[in-house]
Image (cartoon, rainbow, N blue to C red; front, side):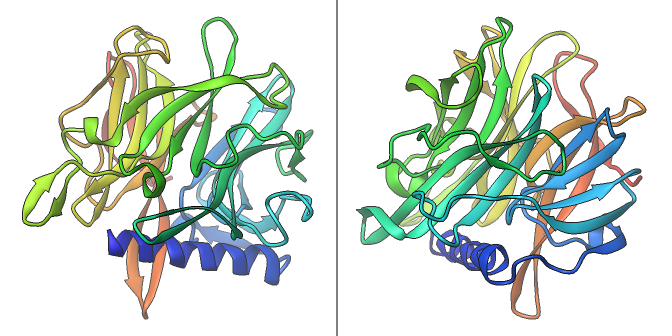
Amino acid sequence: MHKRIGILTCIIMMSAFFNGVMGQRKVKHDIPLDSIRLSDPCILADEVSQMYYMTGTGGWLWKSKDLKKWSGPYWVVDVDENSWMGERPAIWAAELHQYKGKYYDFATFTNNDIIIDTVAGTKVPRRATHILVSDQPDGPYLPVSDEDYLPANWATLDGTFWVDANDKPYMVFCHEWLQTGDGTMEKILLKDDLSGAIGESDLLFLASDSPWSKREVEGKVIPNQVTDGPYLFRTESGRLGMIWTSWVFDVYTQGVAYSESGTLDGPWVQEAKPITPPNFGHGMLFETFDGKSLMSAHSHREENGSYIRIPHLFEVDLTGDSLRVIGPYVP
């Protein structure tokens, strides 16, 4: 647990530094993917511009025509410093989605100056996913509205987007394990224009439901408490699945669950084993312009005393009834 908290603190500090203090960083060109330092990479393949747009923790944007060489980082997020987010919010796990002719940025903001809870001596800051919108894939992205999507006294993160078979938009998100003890995965219905939420959220599953995630407490091996990085998909057979990430002891690892009903309501059944190698997680899925199914994820390593996260691509097979990771993909 202490290592996890230390990693989170490091990311918060890095995010706050890059977001607020530095302003726009120098844009570089022809950068290979494995030379980019980025957590929670999410790639939008935009058919209109025939360009790939990658974002993630930090809120910066990278662009590429071929997934081989990238330009960036570009600063594309603009929030009101008088809102609950504050002057220099940390930004985690930003995702880009195209919906009804516009582009939406689902990003988790943290304001460390607002403490909403204290659990077992640990202060829990205000943290929540907010939705931003732009007419262009490369922004600028502005908040859709000032409305809170979830209760202000909940620490929530990693909101992702899903439109169901009835064209109803939803946010699927995690209620932070630091506050709940056992992290949750939940859904909430959104207004048609994504300007707010409707009603209360529904529990989908708990971190402890996973048979593959583990931790050791007082010499006993028990389920891990972390839910992280949900992303929804359908196989070609129509089966609804969700990739999500937790820990196997001190190793960040990604698994998958499937809905028995084919809807967000589940019940959600966890696969017995992870789907990625150890030290890869917070994945998402997209299709290349030539029709190849890929997953982006990040790995980490320590380098000169710093915690470095690196984006990677995997080729996946969705043609059957389940997601199968074929192996690393090099464009």
